[in-house]
Image 1 (cartoon, rainbow, N blue to C red):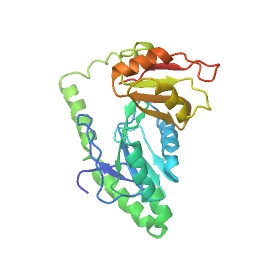
Image 2 (image 1 turned 120 degrees about the horizontal axis):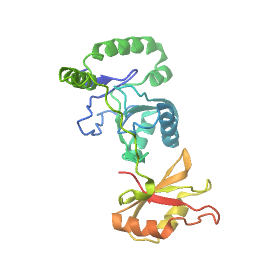
Image 3 (image 1 turned 90 degrees about the horizontal axis):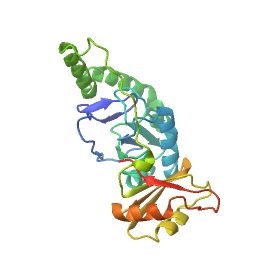
Length: 256
């Protein structure tokens, strides 16, 4: 398959870090979704748990594949029991701000191992053999790997590898000092909070666009306004508001 990157048990549209990732929707929907633009700072196991929690509301999730290697960084696959479930999830979760990054969702080009094992078990061995052969063919032609290798070789030619690189401290700006954003990040919410509650609270302020809860993290949420000015007004008014009469909710601008 030309233009595909082998990702273990599935194929995805090829992409390089320097190119903007654009969702590519296959002509025929399938049971597996290809997720891009994931926050690479989140550990794969945590990301898999979060994705499973986010997508299980649309139907039975058979498998979630996410790795931290060069080929799979910032990407994942979510497999459903039926293509209709995947289609509904693709439509509703597109550009959802997961860990402060809007995820991009498209159909995978091939079925995952989990889907074939469930729906076509008699051909699973043949499917796995073809997948392994495809993986071997693309191992040294992967555009992401090729770019990384070229960069490393260029550094060696320039003498860049002669001296160890100085490791810069990873300093992250505190939430309280983040620049204005039309999306607000809510923390310390009570476990019993409902979307309707937050809608009622923030609809007091003009230009409310959407409230998004995180199924796997009940104590956080995102609230989006149509512009930064409206978001700022709501943030200033409701920061430290006691939603349950006891605990103060923390409101900051979402990271861009």
